[in-house]
Image (cartoon, rainbow, N blue to C red; front, side, top):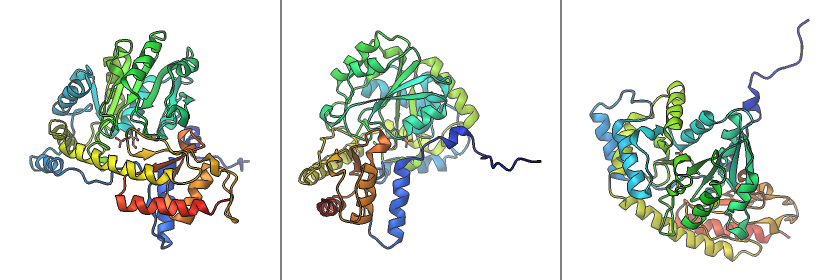
Length: 403
Ligand SMILES: Cc1ncc(COP(=O)(O)O)c(C=O)c1O
């Protein structure tokens, strides 16, 4: 007799994979909005600016010139050269065009690295708080995510000693973003130098440095760990166009890597998706070879909004507020509200608080739990100053009702 036990058609890998909390929160926000509420969405990692006109014009020219065919898998020669030049000019990183792989977003670049480098059970040390997709990508590729965290007192920056303690003989690479999503923290050149020095003792451990928020940095200096001699030949630098050029929908990212790793990413991508969108690649090369004026103007707008949101949140009793140096997120510690209630809803954790703020204040944020920091809340300030003012007022009013 046939078994009556229902079996899932899905793989264990997908069944155990976490859904993206940021996308889930955006969906919940849309649902509350569909009920007729005016929701201010501070949950997504997306600049609210439009792509600069000169980049759009370059895309139109590419279309008119008939650049509508498959491109080489790792990207057009023109774009790979522009990226190699950009790495040298802006970051002092040495990656030849052959070491560059262009992908459909930096997300695919990181996924490529995970599939190219990880065997079953290999470990990846992820510096926390971390971007939600890192652990999911490591795990779906068969790796094990080893999370090493730092709290608000350390400005959410992990020390070389803590990283060293997490390294084992199964560690394949360390993975982090600076400027960081979700905290906005920026590792200084000195801090990166110290991590590199520590890694001199672990010659088999690679570094995956996600620098996608490079241009949204309020310190005036972006440092790349791949410039330090101890890790220069074993650093994979990931970057992309989504944040600095407001090009999220164009889906264009890239990495520079040791040749053998770049070749493996090329091979993988050749079987999975082929080259990235050809029009976007033409526009991307133009963006890299052009003046960064519009990018700098966006950064300045983010800097003004950061002041506004810090000022507003700092006035709320119980909010422990960090002072992010980059990206467009603020990551307050909200644990003081745990255990409180408005008489109807009890706040047990940051998940509850994010849900409460959505339902009560109609402001969408994301629980820090999704980023390996269950005491915190991620608030994106990629919204207009007027929206931010309103959001802060609404959050303050809703939190006042908690006792
Ligand atoms: C830290 C970090 N890395 C990578 C990405 C992915 O960017 P892309 O749009 O290029 O796939 C994001 C997007 O939110 C991010 O926050």
